[in-house]
Amino acid sequence: KQEVTQIPAALSVPEGENLVLNCSFTDSAIYNLQWFRQDPGKGLTSLLLIQSSQREQTSGRLNASLDKSSGRSTLYIAASQPGDSATYLCAVRPDSNYQLIWGAGTKLIIKP
Amino acid sequence: NAGVMQNPRHLVRRRGQEARLRCSPMKGHSHVYWYRQLPEEGLKFMVYLQKENIIDESGMPKERFSAEFPKEGPSILRIQQVVRGDSAAYFCASSPPTAPGGLREKLFFGSGTQLSVL
Image (cartoon, one colour):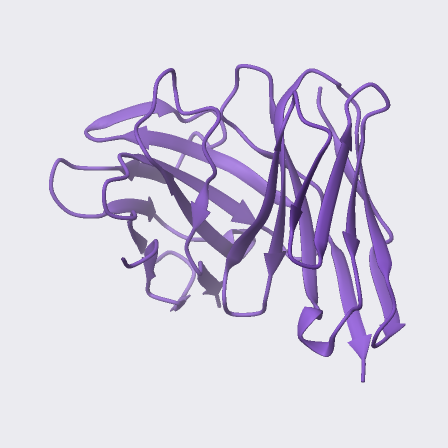
């Protein structure tokens, strides 16, 4: 059974720092992995989608990596800003299955 | 190009009442998914629908919960005789019709409906 874990559960850093959020999954047979951002009252925003054949994806200050064999993904945020404060969720799509399996998220606070 | 629209944003019900949650997918999307997020937990899959068909409802409780996606109009998640444990955020997502099963496609999520049962 696929399980997704995100560590840490919460993180508070000063503005301007680079940071890494971690996501681990127990079954390497995945189709893709997606990182989302959740803002209170604003739903979920897809940040990056990495297909199983890819190693990383980049969008602006965000870079997501995927290591299927070790069951890990990281989301790297460069030069963090207060507007990056949100909960970041990692979701795995198992092989040949449309259901997303979600981590519980990392709540990120960027202090001005 | 409007995104996935969910309404209402907030819904308050007393125990025993019915809750109806609506989801209009993005234009051109024919796949709809419902997820539930309990406090301090990750989202959990509930049901996957295509127009007029329930493809997978394995994540839905067997009783009191039902979902539909009619030919015309939004997808509806219906909870009968709500209990306090139904209090959660309910998210709808949609994806475009690609073969096979749209596995490679991103899901686009709505803002969710926060259901509170008193």
